[in-house]
Length: 219
Ligand SMILES: C[S@@+](CC[C@H](N)C(=O)[O-])C[C@H]1O[C@@H](n2cnc3c(N)ncnc32)[C@H](O)[C@@H]1O
Image (cartoon, rainbow, N blue to C red; front, top):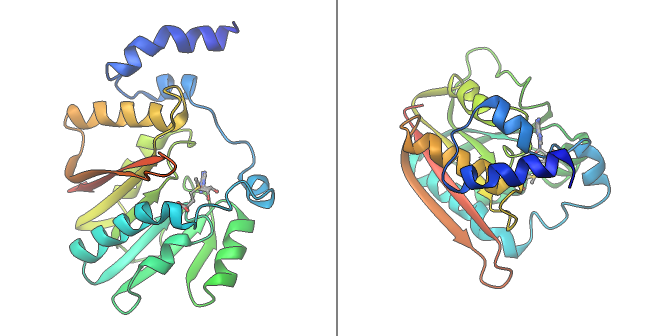
């Protein structure tokens, strides 16, 4: 067993019991993706818009329509812009960005009038004077070097009484990024770090794939 695998297995007991998030602990255990653009070019994410994943997108859009009603949302790490199809554009203004230029190009081809750009979550800054009614991290946190810090950073981009919506794929491997981040994030919630308006789990009964969603308020 490599030292890294050994470290992970030693830590496993802590993780299932709700390990608190620290940058050091996260960075020691998560698996980064080196080149997101390559994964899009290789077609690794061609299923993001499939009907089998519709429920997780529809849930986020449902939260936005119910809570924001009319306003501007930011989709941080929007991929190919799958979420755009789920919004009532008569009342929801949409901005999306992604680190992958290929994903953004495909999103723009599908949605020529959508406001999209290529940027990293770490570097994105809203245009002067813009605050969002909701910021959405739709399956885009768990490969970041500093996921919880990014939630905190984006809280400054949300209007007072706005929302941050996090949806996270639950990797079946308990040491996978999604499962690891969920356990640490929930430990932070249990410690009172954020206020949660609602939390939900979406399960596709055919594939048994599941996503947890959290609607944070007062961030
Ligand atoms: C699993 S995909 C989800 C895409 C989309 N949100 C969806 O649910 O269909 C993760 C997305 O996060 C983007 N991403 C990962 N790290 C990023 C970063 N540091 N800055 C911006 N986007 C990032 C990837 O390029 C990818 O599009």
